[in-house]
Length: 357
Ligand code: PMP
Image (cartoon, rainbow, N blue to C red; front, top):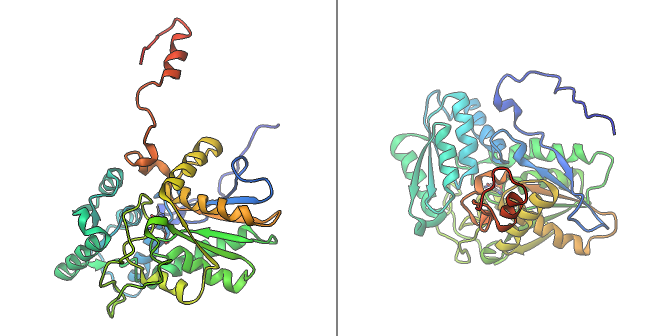
């Protein structure tokens, strides 16, 4: 095999923000069943490490365009992490102060990541769940005249997936059929934006939505109440805390409602959190693809889809973020810090620099 060569991207970027999107579609070679072709779209390649970079940039630039956001105005948002990290990166690059509200239950890495970008992180009690951090952000925006990013309601969310993520998918499957597109939801921006385009331009693609088995709020059929601004006015009764950070808040967001109302998914498959963790570990250890728990959960769902998919089917799985922000979570439970017995044995097998653990 000849040595690998590269050519550069043929351009110089004016800003880190111009590197958002155009994430790669990658074949799964070892852990998927042989009768199907499984591909993943790895959003970890975004500069902020997640799919939410897309939304963060569009929320800020759309608000700049139509004057909702003034130069130097503080931005505030409730976020479990990735939107906060994306917004923190965008606000740092553009010079806006950012305040993020976040339930204390989310991973410590995420808070510190936002702070290194210069954001302020205001924690809310875990008993108040997603609805609590959300109410706090709203209150802070109203009291201080800050710009509320409103990822769960704003049209700028699904619009950017329609304009970028969906176009990339069609481009990557140009001249090929795409049989299944599998995704979870947090705000619902990904599924709604991508589905708008697939339904129009690739109507044969089956769209599979997934949610945590112990928080199957869409599957319950009950839709929580919302106010005139489309904000939830109650938590969803079928919600339970789940380990799939970034998925399913304790209400059905307005952005996701468009997918429900328009029948944008062909199947809704619940997936247990531990399955997500198990598949995330397998993606890292057997494919070299290091991603978060929601990515593992989406992949777990795709493996269920594969069981009944016809021979030669092409399945595309959304992998929303990198695994690096999960070090303190169950994803890394049982991953040793000190040497394992096997590692000690390797150390002791030659005389130099032996360590007993
Ligand atoms: N996974 C993770 C880790 C996320 O942070 C998010 C966004 N909250 C999602 C999945 C879901 O994406 P969306 O908000 O577009 O539905």
